[in-house]
Length: 243
Length: 259
Image (cartoon, rainbow over all chains, first blue to last red; front, side):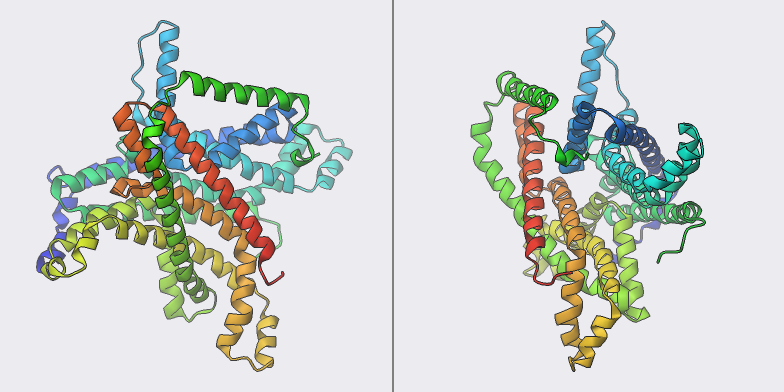
């Protein structure tokens, strides 16, 4: 029983300097956050394009986007990550060979951002499309009747109108992005979960390190929640309060 | 005009369909599938394991989600605060991390505890199954707990008061009115959460539970193939997702209480 507690309480292993592993964990957290932010932004760009394509594109574009969002959302993230990670790097190297260049060594960070971005893009497409559609059509027609240009309609009516509908879904997807980065441990990207396991494997204090990593992830979530609440309040300003 | 109104017989869809069929024929001819017969039996077993895991953890998770949701929606503070904290912590950390914390972390701590080492539970505590089931159940319960909180809170108070006025005991009101109405409200979201749960199950393969994902990983190690096994795996999960969505649609149409 005493050893049982001692396994938990070897706190000096979390020191930031090299005998401890705290610095390694924080570096892993930095990688995780970079992948999450990069993947989320890439997913947002794909999402805007996808939503615009689904709403205003021709029938062919719409069908292709339907296939993309349906496939990505029906397959587990872990499987997608393996497929995109290996297929993506392989395709890039084949392309490099095709144009006669040296095969590239793709960093795990870039590949991770690409993978998370493609997955996020499918979900963000749906969120943004729903938010666009939630803006009442009469408001857009009224703006047009006032003689606004389509850019003015977008800036003054559509974007502020869709924001309160988009923010909750986008906020959820941000939290999912921060946690999906953990799956990159399976393909060997040195993000927080993988370095935690390595720290545990070296010192045999698995519980301590996974517990510490869990606290780090939880901190990211809680800080995000504070920011999300602020953004939500900003997006909903001037609207009736809904509880 | 929404996409659901358009038929697949439109010319561009026929072209897309032809391209799709072409890709499938290309994949069948030019990719290597000779490993498939050798592994088909184990793949079927793996799918069985995945489905059993899904069924077990979503059933158990739902059982825990009801009290979690009820505590948060209507419980006293000493019940609602820990319930809310459980949901926040589980939803705020990655499932993979929880899984590894339980399997490597808790599992390694148990080894230090002689009483447990000598007890009947030790063989079970050394295998991966209990940890996988526990982690998936907790995760499902936390996400569903939030759903049920909203569903419980959304049932109109008047219906519950009407039940009391008919002379039902609080438990009868809960069993006959509150719970069925909440489940009916929550069912579409529950369907979505169950699909997410299906997509979370392959994570247990990382702690040596042999599900369909683990079998495919085995194929990849044995044959050095990358795309073929993973494509097949994606196809299997797509089919399972489709079946699950259809099953829930059937269930939604058949739930006794109408909204």
